[in-house]
Image 1: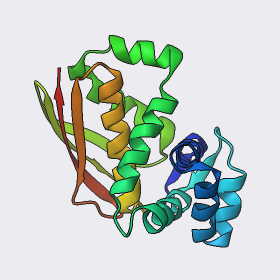
Image 2: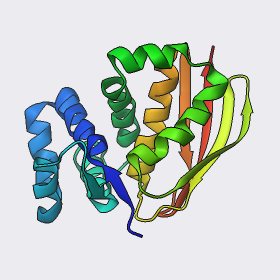
Image 3: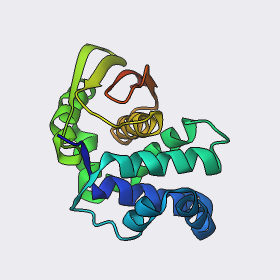
Length: 183
């Protein structure tokens, strides 16, 4: 089965690019993408499913245009995307969730954004968690860094005084994650 992502993830990524780099930044990123994917990001619908290769191409363009060859910029984009995606009502709910259950919620939310893959948080403690996401195909380090940034954003939105979520050993089919936060 081809991995697909919900359009909201792509759409929010484009909104963050505009927020951080302006309309000219959006133009630069689109120009750096293959034409077939450029057309898709211009007309993406939040509720539709899109092949993960669209998001992978988007993050490759972000790396090339703003990251000077580094995928780290996708982490920042993911962090900002979480702030845009989880506002108002959702922000209040996230604030009410205890830290030790955030990882359970991520496992429940994953299928709302992805058609494949399984998150598993196998080590959880006070202020730290380690886990992995397996069973996907076509993800690149930019997509994984964006996921890590979104997780970090959720921790901050939930009330953490500081947080860090790192994507480790990313491949096209899986990635390990390490999360640290201050309560």
